Length: 252
Image (cartoon, rainbow, N blue to C red; front, side):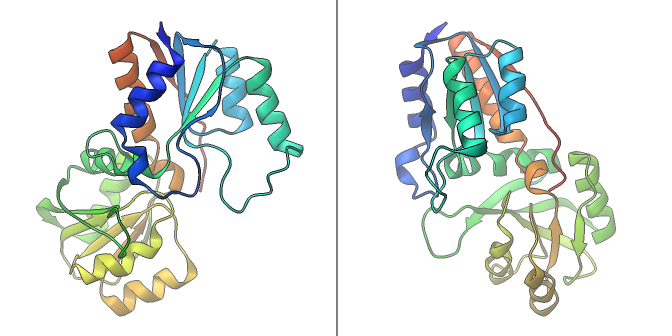
């Protein structure tokens, strides 16, 4: 058991949340009971995840996609009312970390995706605003684009969308999980052979062809399953808590 305030303070500092200008608040978004015994982690704080967490006796839900995004209607109606009601009525805290979790060098989504694909990070790149979220590395052995696509499918259990545009052999790869398809031009500026992200836009196909880079859309949810569960395991080990990751498949 650990005090909620101690766990939150530790995690905020671990992920250096004050270094980021984000689209949502990072850290404690909904306050529940003052002590934590069990953490449930998941990618998104959907109603399905909340209900599953209630059923398993969670004291705290840890997510990558939480609430209170910029530009959203702030009124507590509809699904927002039901979600917040579920948390408050069951005295469960909601802890959410967005960009800080993407970026963490060991526990983050980018770091974990690189480990899954067997690519050691060699450097970072961005789009002119700090911090740089894109990362890149060299493959241990050069790969045919089709073989590399199969490697992604095997690692994530999801067939990626491959937009060809790069060389016949892939040697260098950049990646940034989630909705980071706009980083493809920054990856091309680095001279990389391929770039991986979660989502894809209509213009991505044209950019890949015209900038001479392969693009792999591997799924927003699929590329961001790993940071939050790694963070959950870390917190459970440090504070001697129970942790359960609940994966609710999402085709996007």
